[in-house]
Image 1 (spheres, helix red, strand yellow):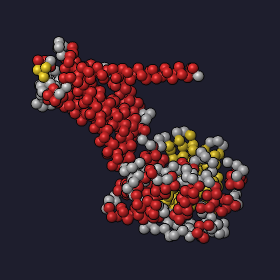
Image 2: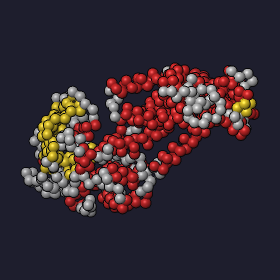
Image 3: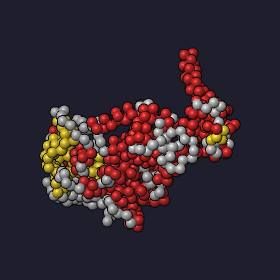
Image 4: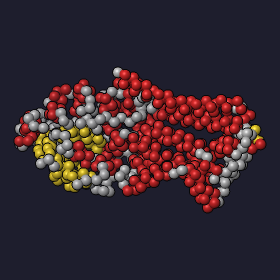
Length: 278
Length: 285
């Protein structure tokens, strides 16, 4: 009896510790970041190396980098996942090789991706320090996550659908589009959100590829400063930038939250429209 | 089109008494639609079926009985080339459908599966509306006029006796139907493609007795219009509905093989092989 109470208490303690850390982190950011947060802060350009002014151009750059990364990575990732799960045998040499490579890639430190992006996109392809280089580098970084989650989602789709569709003489592509992808949709979305989260949080890879410039970018070939880079710069290189670093961090978290919510509700609506009520 | 005459109770009850043993059954054509000759099937190196030869007669119900693991389902999957989807599955022997070689690699498999439909043990409604469940395969086979789709949908749902139950909620999810309704929807979905043959892999075994009875009645009504091959573990059911029966058994702990094939009445009342006699009387298997 006492053992049970002890064990239950211990488990509660662990859970409380984990949530406690999160609450602490969030409240720290809220307490320090909220006072400076205003519409002006969101819209204005940074002044005095970011000590004053806002983060308008930085939000734009961040969203552009994210857009480039996701527009590139999502179709590539989905296509690879479909290839792996539907058109190659699970135990084939090709499949195993690709999966192993992806797992290794997913574990590669982001600074390595940064150096690769710098060497390949900035220098070799001549894109220079630009939003395009940064976005493409991030795309390489999130691809492994996207592919693996999408593939697992597809694998988890009931095999009965494949068999039943085949038995009705439906081509595999039709089964994929009408049955398998929709039933994997929650996993696809989760993967996409993980990818977005990782891309938004990335600093190291972007310093080398999209650069530091905090002006509003004119095109994708302009350099642009991402929020995470801005936070890093304010807190490490700019004396007296801490307050704005906090606000920027708060904006970053809010952005993530907003993107997540929008994606979730869009997906829910879409699934709901397919099947009116389950 | 696919209209089925109303259930004739008198015929249904007598359907397994097929007259004299030698003669063809009265209610269907003794003309072979599928001829299987010396069929052997391997999964990897392991044989699952050996030297099976039998004819499936047009318009008849053929029941395949036997213990689990004796290759009945494998046999069914050869007939609509579902074996193509199983890696490391090797088939040898001759299978002819309507005179065409069914194992021809150049055969249009999607067309074949339209002609030879399949119903699974567990009903597999797609996670779509009832209407879309029937329309989706039709659209894939090139039927896209909404009026035509509506007609076919109503017709096949009437055929399987589901129309009155669902006509008011065609747009709601097929997953909300009961197990028996789902299975009838799956049969309707297959019928919509106007198949010649329906392969049924224990279509009633996942259903409760009442639903099972409804589906069984439906299968009876398919006779004549469609050729049905049904795998069943329910001997009483096989006896009630089938014109022909094939008994499979695992020989020497190795591969399944066909022990005896003949008219249903003969298999159940005057089996030639002693294994068949033991199985149908319940003393073995």
